Image 1 (tube, rainbow, N blue to C red):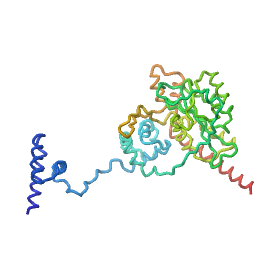
Image 2: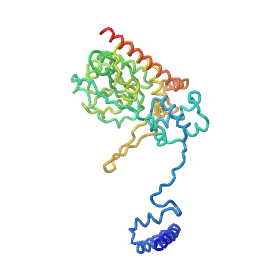
Image 3: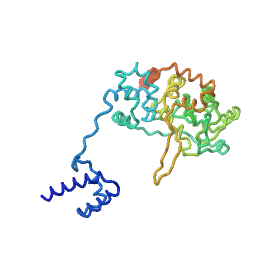
Image 4: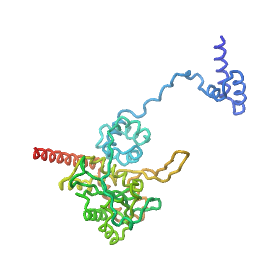
Length: 393
């Protein structure tokens, strides 16, 4: 009987508490705590509980499924064809890719398309969580430090003063496989710090003259003037050939601190997304493989990454206690960021040409071209390795 009276009293107090104003709630809390000897915070928890709600220990029923299997299937298809971008970038590219997806993704109805347009990055993470389990690899550098001219080239550790395109970070990614012996292909990567625009060329070996030739070719492909380069301390960059080339073309040359990869954070991130995710850790060491990789770098792969792949930029960092709070700009493709920088009226002719070229491209078709080219390259490498083993035997 005492238990029943307590429950009735609790229900009565709960109804009165939820209807009372602030001062009335305070008086009720004093009365309730003196009667039950509960701590004030625990009393607030009891009195704020939903009337006729579930008793303690019983979980409330979860909200129903909002995005069904058809939405998940369409999202996975676009995510795969886009090269597995993270949720914020995928969310930004969906409006641009959906018109093309109607002819490439099975089951993309107007209802599914509407759901994809309103889905949040957090929900994207939930829907794709089962598909994101994959092996992770460690990336080991094979760069030999260069001492020539090292102390004559200015060190740059911060890029916060860069407010426009033209200043790039450069680096090499080795395709040596499990052994660094002999000559093999490198991917020579340059990334614009402001826009994220990336150009890449494959070079066989890392000879000084070959690096300068590749850089000169990529400079002509950029839709903006090349104003400065920032490299690590490898001998492929710290040499007289590159210094003379920069002086001739009035390009500022700076370098990072030794063993401080954060000084080149932009290019280090692109080494993963634009090279390792595409070509993996296999060994490529023939002129034919180098030429096949360059077909991708000069065409579909670079177009996909600069025209149709949004990225985010770090705007500010703030220390809050023991943590650092980072704020990012909205996700944009490198081309969109260039257009925003120049403004609609002042867009240079080179950028207008790129915009015109993008309007004639289908990102799904580009993705299929990339996959087919990589598959041909893999078959060629497998055939060459098999033939080499037979010769050895």
